[in-house]
Image 1 (cartoon, one colour):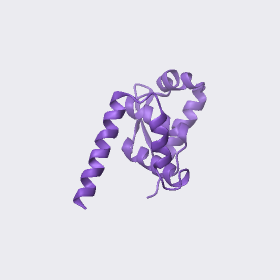
Image 2 (image 1 turned 90 degrees about the vertical axis):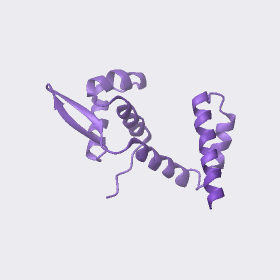
Image 3 (image 1 turned 45 degrees about the horizontal axis):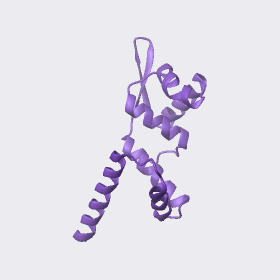
Image 4 (image 1 turned 30 degrees about the horizontal axis):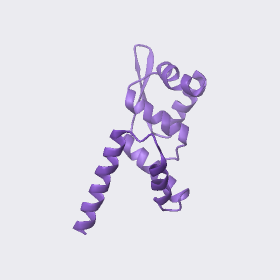
Length: 128
């Protein structure tokens, strides 16, 4: 089954819910929505859209619906990144690497993740 497409705002919301699940619409609106200028009704609409697309599920807990992700968060992120690389960067990661090299806010953790990825890619290439 092919999943429906997901927009940037929906992806950010899905990532937030994945990191804070299970969570209610009210909690998401207060912590995620307010910082982005999104009304509670907009957050609810987005969460229900993600549920309709099959990315979220909800269960009632003491009269409140609590939402959690249904798919592995990394699977969704990988799909979004793959789509971005193919559609926006025409299949080349070089523009992204150039952007990263100029970005001043790369954290120590992000740098360590990038170094680990390069090491993994080099190991895979040697095996081939």
